[in-house]
Every structure is written in structure tokens, then in C-alpha cells.
Length: 309
Ligand SMILES: Nc1nc2c(ncn2[C@@H]2O[C@H](COP(=O)(O)OP(=O)(O)OP(=O)(O)O)[C@@H](O)[C@H]2O)c(=O)[nH]1
Ligand SMILES: [Mg+2]
Picture (cartoon, rainbow, N blue to C red):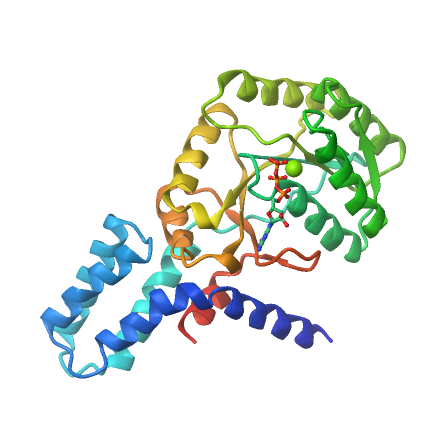
């Protein structure tokens, strides 16, 4: 049963990464197809760069392969690819996602979900709520996107489908007040985890970023030390822009984790390496589709394997 789940998860990642694979791995395999020599290896830099790994990573990896080849000129193309996979894995394993901390005493763990409009916050909240519920946790979701009535309804519909508790605000009401009600309800109902969905906000709009601070201050008033986690949702299809968003959000409100959505629709899966190299914020989950099941904990090993299959 467990094996079946893992396998289906792996197959999903593989399918989601197929566009990235054809841009990255197929090209690498073509590059090393015939003979390998220092010039061929130099060609790797361009391939890595074009697959969104970033200039610095592309350079470092290429140099590292050159060095390896100098030391072992009898290496076969397969040996070189294996070595490259090891190096890629090393990048991903440098910023592991720590275990979620157990909430103090019996208070709920509070997770705040933030991000730019349309990146997949509400959908990710629903998907995470489902995972937690399936693992036996009592979950409550908070619809603080009072900016749009449709935003509230979207989460309420998910919550009903998944059969999890939801607290919502009235359209145009203060998001911090909704957070207050939601945390109070979560405490009263002995919830294990509360996921707070927020309105989409551009990282460049200062008042909207300040609104997040207000939500956080309110959380801290109801549950000391909360929110325990602040996760930023990024859209893989936006490439470099995702990195810029994360840097600015992180300045305003320190992030403890990232969720990368829409890997299924993207040829820019290489961004995962750049995220690790440049941001050093743990990547918690990847989104690989629109369904409730289409979110998986990020696993470096299966990510690299799936990329090269
Ligand atoms: N293919 C795919 N679509 C996704 C994924 N995650 C979210 N989406 C879709 O992206 C669209 C936007 O998702 P939402 O969850 O509404 O995004 P949001 O960040 O809450 O948007 P705002 O509240 O408007 O800021 C929806 O159509 C989702 O179904 C994913 O991993 N893969
Ligand atoms: Mg939303």
C-alpha cells in the first residue's frame, strides 16, 4: 500500500517534469551521446543555463565535471551523467526542510500561506489540508482573502469537499480579524493545525505587505509564538520572477518554507536548483496538478531521479 502510494507519487513527479526533462536531460544525453572531451563538456554550461539553473550554478557544475573528467579521462558518458546527478542532488540536499515543529502544549500549529496573485495559495492550502487530514490531524482552514468574495468561496468549497473546518470573513472585512476568529476557533475546537489562506499580494505593494504583518501580530496575540510557519507559494512557470518574489517577501516577512506550484505545466523545473542555491529557504512541497492529490512533499532524491529518467 505504502509502496503503491510512493510509486504513484514518483510517477506523477516524472510526468510533471517531462517538459523540464526534455529541455534539460534529453539535451545533456544528446550532448554526451558520442565522444566526450573538454569541448563537449563546455557545452553543458549553456544547456544548464537555458534550463533555468542560473549562471553561477551552470558554471560551477560544468567546472566540476571538467575537473572530474581531467582526473578520470576514461569516464563514459553514463559515468559523467551519474556524477552530474550526484552534484545536483548535493545542491538540493543543502537546504533540507526540517520536521514541522510540534506545537507547544496543546495549541494548534499555525501555518500562514502567502504569495503573489494566482500562484496557487488557495489550492495549496486545500491540498495540504487534505494531506494532514489523511494523516489523522484535525485541520482548520481560514479564508482571510476578504478582498474577493470569490476567494472566500473557493476555499469554503474546498473545505466542504474535503470535510475540514473553515472559518471565513465577510467580504471586505479586516483579514486580521478573520485570523483572530479562526485561531480562537481552532483553539476552542482543539485543532492540530490551522492553515491561513491570504489574499494574493504583489511583493512590491508596501501597504499589502504591511497587512501581512498585522495578520501575524494578531496570530501572535491569540497563540503565542504563532504563526509558527510562513510559507510562500511560487509559480514554477514564472522562472526568475519567482526568485525575485521570494527575496522581497522574505525581507518583509521571514519565510520558513516554500511551495512551488505548477511544475506540471512548466519546462522551468530547473528553477528548483536555483531556489536552493539562491534562497536557502526549504522547499516543502511541489504542486504537480490541479487536483487535491497533486501536491507532494519535495524529495530531492526522487526529483533528480525523475528528471533523468
Ligand atoms: N496545473 C496546475 N495548476 C495549479 C497548481 N496549483 C494551482 N493551480 C491552478 O492555478 C490557479 C490559481 O490557483 P489559486 O489557488 O486560486 O491561486 P491563489 O494564489 O489562491 O490566487 P489568488 O487568491 O487570486 O491570489 C487555479 O486554476 C489552480 O487550479 C498546480 O500545481 N498545477
Ligand atoms: Mg486564493
